[in-house]
Amino acid sequence: MKEAKINAKGKTPREVNSKLKKMAEEYDRIIIKNPNAMHYLAAGLTGDVEVVIDGSAGYFAGTMIHGPRIEIRGNAGWFPADNMTRGKIKIHGSAGDGVGQGIYGGTVIVKEDAGSRTGEIMKNGTIIIGGNSGFMTGLYMMGGQIIVLGDLGKDAGESIIRGKIYVKGEVESLGKNAKIKGITDQEKEELEKILGENGFKLEKSEYKKFKKIIPRSRRPFYGKEVEEG
Amino acid sequence: MCGIAGIVYKDGKLHPAGRDMTKMLHALQHRGPDSAGFSIYGGLKLAKDEYLLNIEIKEKKGILNKVKDTIEAMTRIKSEEKIQSVENYIIYRCKISLDSFSQLKPLITEIDKIEDVTVLNGSHSFEMIKDVGSVLEIADRYDTWSKKGTHAIGHTRFSTESIVDRYHAHPFQSYIIPDITVVHNGQITNYWKIRDPLERKGHIFETTNDTECIVHYIADKLADGYKLEEALEQSVKDMDGPFSYIVGTPNGIGIAKDQLGLRPGVMAEDNEIFAIASEEMALGEVVDTRHIEQIAPGEVRVYEI
Image (cartoon, rainbow over all chains, first blue to last red; front, side, top):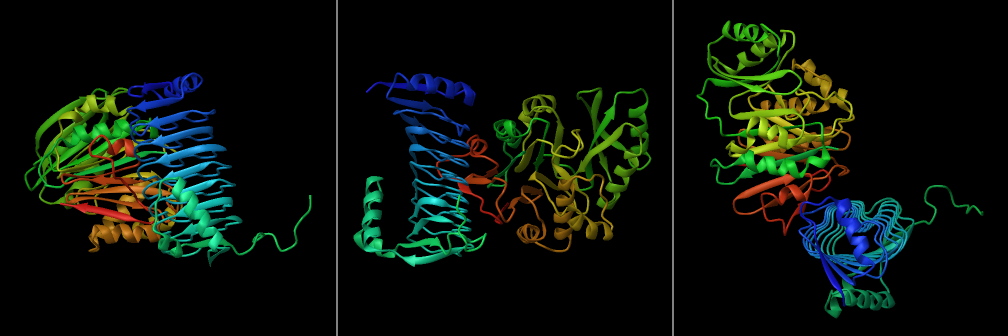
């Protein structure tokens, strides 16, 4: 494995990202030292490369990535993994608002708490929150799954259209078009598999606590008639 | 987009608040290039009846003397200092005594009548420093690095609708009660609905800037007997729009965030420091950020010493 380091201290996000993109063509693993909660780290990065951000990242960490595996050894600001199409972002600490906003694929993991609007307008992919997730989690969600091991804040699943929000803890309140159901044995098995693969080991009995939030209607705003075209 | 920050030293003693706030604001420079400002509390150590006036004066012959004459018509100038700013302005700072706090605003109004003169603020328990330019330029101009305090708030400004000048730089101050200041990131969209009842109570607005509206609102609530936390909670219910703002008082600081959480706010603390800011990178300048907390939509946090 070929490994390289970038020292972000004193550099602009553009300088760090330009260097990162160039190095990603040659190295398998790149460690960004002294990130100091810098914004836009690894924005638009593609390819099969591993990136370690050795500290906290700022806003839009890993936005629009396609393929990389990014590990953030600290916290992340607003919108980590925004519009990701493929890849994985693992955040060891907490994260701000809009985790996984609009993702089309890939996996986002936050080991601790996340802020508001986790998974808003996501189309596919998986988001796992190890702690609590705040206000309007899954806002206008259009596909994929969100798994929350802690509690959900107010208006969970607000205007959800498609997709599922699995939650092990309490739900403060549901948003419009959202309803709660129990989960099936098959879903329990799937949760155990995906959580296990991503470093969350729960007792078997813990899986009984999960419930899911799904849409009441697939067309909540424009009437029951499905338009063709 | 603006940057806001606040810091409290939990032991209530004097610490390098100017240096720490300068570092926090420099980390937030990208959120606002127009101007920057500080309220540094606790370091002035003025006598009970003393106040510090902070006055912007255009460099034109005779104006400074007019300002001094106006002040001395009411009270003696006990000490003075001139700081060179940009665009042919100086900042004239002087220490005065007044029989009561109620004389301060009328004196400021008299001084403001002089052409090319604007009183930036008058304070007793805190030092306000605000100017146009970058954080580091302002820090060097006013030597914020050496200022001591028990707590402080600060701001980097990205102007949306109001003009860019020294007076419109944050913090804003209210004279309804002594030494209340506010720094703000966002917009209050029901501005007139908040302002009208305050004006009907006799409170004077100098601008149409929504941050001035917030500081008068909070000062009015505190004057009515609300605790800071209660005033902030009520503001979240009364005010519309995207906002997060920090209030500074002689006793501490508090943050409030709009009910949809449309502007950022994070906090971190240890045994010595309580700090809040728009972004983690500012917190990282003064406190361990391995564990930070997001300020939730509609949430308020207060730390008083």
